[in-house]
Image 1 (cartoon, rainbow, N blue to C red):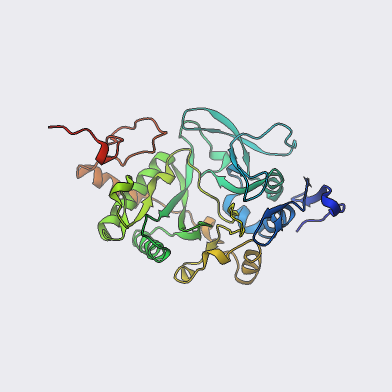
Image 2: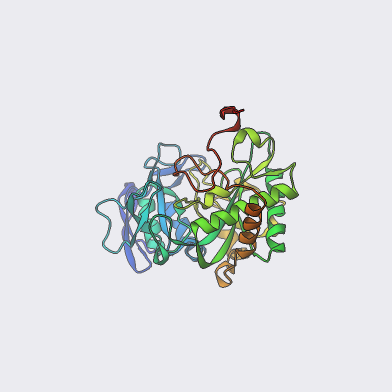
Length: 349
């Protein structure tokens, strides 16, 4: 935990010693979350309280910052580049965007880096799916996370998300791929697997596409791999494109920009049937971790292989399937179908 070097009275700046570094927190009593009145300082203290788990989950990763200078109820912007005036100790890493632009992103090297970002109004962190040491350019980085976002369609409730998560786990278990789950901090669940440092993001995305398609084949009335919303119906979308190169996902243990200060909280698989998303906040999560431990504690110890999913992908291609559509910001990809919604596609004879 942090040591306060001088008083925070009247909102005066304070200094905190974190990870052997001095971090200056300005306007520490500024309210960031209006439901219970949590302040900027309380947000820093939350992150300090879960230092071990959050560093295990995102330590060493380049991180996209989502900044809310006026708190969760205010306007926001995403920031890839570290701004001028950053402390000399702040670690940075060059990352490529979809259009080939390089940016110097903050590396979540330790809890002091997190606190520095929070001081600038960063509520949520969006880490890249690779370590800074494995960063490459133009999508050639070595990705070590499979990330599955279960996205509710209109008419789909959280009970359907719960079942979709359990169905996804069952398939991954069958393939010998150990998975972990967290709340999104909003309405859904995210499923992760720590991977061997073998595949680029292109390979991980291909594995995710194969996973989504197999889940749809097994559960056609409840799960879908359909990229176009008009084709999903009232089914849970298994969002494979969260694994596309340069994509980031809202980080584990990060705090959502919601007035209740909800956390994207790792949970055990046993909690999925009963978890209450709104109850996991900066006020409750540290005590939960103290009592129960980190449910992702074993994630890094045994990296997984996605080869079974890549074998399924190859079989899908051999059976005549094309690649799944990519998001619109990406260049046209080999073997990709027309990037237009079916209802808007030109009719051909």
